[in-house]
Image (cartoon, rainbow over all chains, first blue to last red; front, side, top):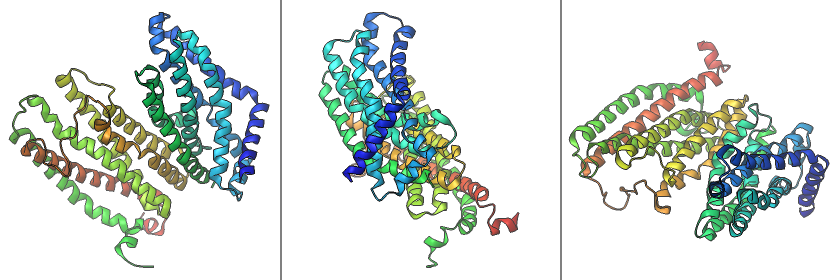
Length: 218
Length: 243
């Protein structure tokens, strides 16, 4: 079972490596959206420091969401998904592997880049640390919950907007706690809540995603 | 195959005439109960010592909010039942409930804003209960959008069911939000175990309108269900002969 799990991760990472453009595109999207805030709202430093964490979180959220189509669409198109679902290994495990690989290629780059972008907003050092922690806890949840949306809308017309409509309401608690952690006087409570959400998502999201994938592949 | 009522009315063909019989009675009940409740609330109930007469919107706001949550739970229940038992009438019922639930959510949000402005000076605040009720509206809209985007009816049923079940976690959040967070929204005045902290006349008016809203929701959902049955079962023999 471990072999199947690691095999799926390895395959997805290899594919992402070979199609670096896709991965880099969502990273650049994150950078561009984060840059839009000072361009649209004015460059006043005090205001940028106030909206910085929230804007970075929103940019990370949108970048995560736009990358969701990569999760299952390619495999669905060439038939690999069907083979994965037919395998004797539990679908939940294989799906969890795909989501982990997706997070490694989408979420981690955002987490690594966020201190650099926090410089653009002039955030103080402790806020940057909390932002890092909240993104580190939050981006896997975004991938996990987003996977459910991606599986439900596999092959459905309506495009990225449909997945956004389904997934953004579910993303709201993560945004509230993630961005809230950076401005709260006691960030620990927010980070603990994010950790709890991560634990719940880890346990339940792969299962719901696998169910949605079966529905989509019939 | 048992012929019990449960199995008999799981068939669209059998349920269709039953729904047809129920709708007029439920509609009459809805009108009478709502009228009675509004009479009690708008005429009989006294003026609030703190908020004056503007509090009377409670007789629309609270029933609408309650129905928005209850209908989501019912929708998730029927959708889940359809997913597990593979009964298409259950999924059709979930699809029939969604627009009514969304309407009550909009009504609750709108009347809440109308209440908030004279009482607290704000049309809207981003506190926990209002935000989670807004998310409920987005969940309803997401459910309806997903179902309309998928052309195959059975796949739409099952996908919608997964979405509805994932979103059901929002309902306890709405309900307990006033307890878990410091919110502008009022806390719970009515509990199943303690005496209500509001005047009995007001409570009576609110409960009457709630029952009327429930009867309306039932009637509206059944009417919509009949339309859905006609659309989806149009190739069945019982409809082909009738057409």
